[in-house]
Amino acid sequence: MNGGALIAEVLVRHGARELFTLCGGHISPVLVEAKARGIAIVDVRDERSAVFAADAVSRLTGRTGVAAVTAGPGVTNTLTAVKNAELAQSPLVLLGGATATLLDGRGSLQDIDQRALLEPHVKWWGGARRVRELTPLLEHAFQRAREGVPGPVFLECPVDLLYPEEVVRDWTLSAAGSSHKVAARLARTYLEWHVLRVHAPERVASREGSVSGAAPATLSGRAVRKVVRALARSRRPVLLVGSQATLDAGRIEELASAVGRLGVPTWLSGTARGLLGAEHAVLSRHRRREALAEADLVLLAGVPCDFRLGYGRPIGRARLVSVNRSAEDLTKNRRPDVAVLGDPAELLLELAGRVEEPDRWAEWRGVVEARDAEREAEIRRRAAAPAPGGLNPLALCAAIDEALDDDSIVVADGGDFVATASYVVRPRGPLRWLDPGVFGTLGVGGGFALGAAWSRPRAEVWLLWGDGSAAFSLAEIDTFARHGRGLIAVIGNDASWAQIARDQVAILGDDVGTVLARSDYHRVAEGYGGVGLELDDPAETGAVLAEAKRLARQGRAVVVNAHLGASDFRKGSLSM
Image 1 (tube, helix red, strand yellow):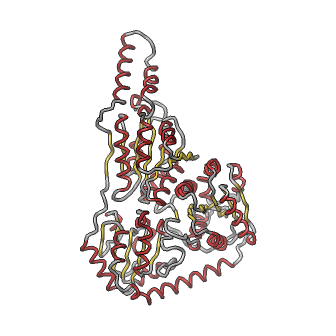
Image 2 (cartoon, one colour):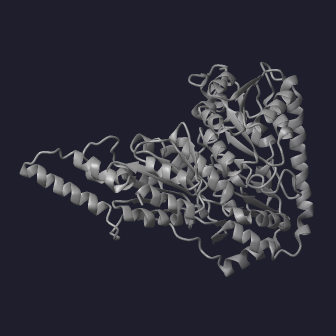
């Protein structure tokens, strides 16, 4: 077997059904051999999208997503997506091509120090130097990606390890020429020996990167008892569930049931959005800060006290309980009264089996529900108002929410428009919402939507784009079109980087760098083989979205260019 075949065999053993990539000569054997074994090769238009797509597969399915990119610029292009996965604690395997082992550091095409670039931003780095190292290193990569605090891993695969030995020998010996001089004969002998050595069947030592992290600690019985006692004494508890609690896709329904049985007012974030469906007695969506200030117990399940939680400041005098796989995140910015190192889902499942009186918090839930209802009514009033210059973004988001199928996945990629949607659009079930995570990365949209479409081929995929973020991955409409996959992408077009403009103009009095054009994104989509629809009349919103859904069911990639009017809904929403 050549090295490409060895890698493909490992991918099959680990359940990989798709390999996201942008082609390059350094990795061609991996693509050919993976295709021969039934793995779908999804060739994208930007290497970042390949990694974002692999990330989405991991988040939605519990399988470890895989991407392969060529050497040099192929690897460097992935860095933002890799860092996004690291900070989101999302497991994935990235295979990177590299120059031939004999030419390492000699100035060959696309030869750079990839280890120095990637190692600080991945959970594990490995570099093969012999064909026989590929299999054990890749097996180890899959293990490292998921254990402990999950994250991305990188395996460097030199090109001469991937092609058949006879091909590598021909390439290598051709460099020595045909001279019969002693020096030339010695060079040929050395080159032949090198080819034999790197393709030798016996195992040899590998060049392996540093290993960090460990398996999540088994929940301490003492710590669990502390949490149970704290919950039993509480009269106004609050539960916050984050992405880390949803890592085990196989237990997601069990987790949802457990959270419901606890009976505690619950706010969901990240991939956990949708865990309880669109409506649930314990689900809260609004006015979290007020609840945190009044609570006597706050339970953070996989949620660190970072900027998204005001660095812990909104939590008043409540007793703070935190469970997290990461020891660093467990105590970030605010030390909890009870700290549990381990899997948040496991703790929630344990608590659900021990809570005897979930209705004891019915009165407190009523207070939270009343506030939620009040905020919902306010949003409906705002949505009914006209928006100068175009569509009311709240009304558009409400129409999107109304149009969602029960089996739908929502991908969020943008600033102001997407943040507005987060107040209104309700994912219909667990693992049906994808956003960048803590890094706040614009440009995830095309890749995340590809990962969603391939991991859930029967689901209706919605991509909510801001007009600024759309430009990062709009070319992936071409990928959808070439592969015949349906998509409904809605671009909230307000001709502005509105998330930045709101505060920049108010504080500094200048909109420099924040102004865009009302571009014809629907025509761009058509150029890439998709279908473009323009929406600028509020009365046509329902009909346009219905047409987009109809076309998507036919395997068409649809982009709705929705012209937004002015809105102050998110005034003063700066986050840093």
